Length: 178
Image 1: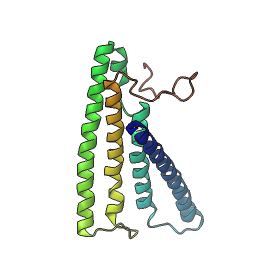
Image 2: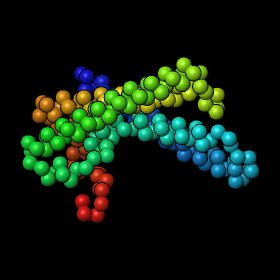
Image 3: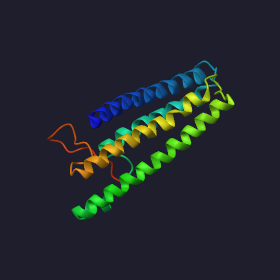
Image 4: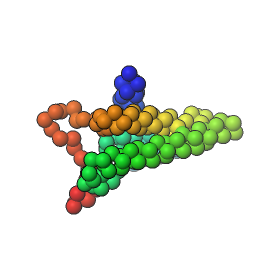
């Protein structure tokens, strides 16, 4: 049940990341048209674009982790024997969990300070509204890692299988030798 809830939240977060990515693209197009065609550059596009990029990254990271596409060094793990492979995967998951805990703590402290100080963005939004995206995104990443650790402990596959049973999952390779 916990695993299904985390999967559903991760899917919603990925949709939010997708919308933020498209909104960022639309914003860039709009800013270029305003600057180059109408000679009226926007004063707020860089800041809003940065926050949209942050939303894209923090909300997509959990989905990337869940599918096994998060940043990792696979070549050593793939060549290891099964028992060592499980230890390496567990160590990697524990490091991601520890990093997530640090980012949740620090992100929450940053947002709390901005709220206490009454800081606003250049577009007039309370700064903490946007800064709270960091601990939220990393909390979701932590939940995904906890599910993966539970799956590893039960001897189940850690990462989601590709949807199409006949096709291999597309992989981004680190270099030409991989």
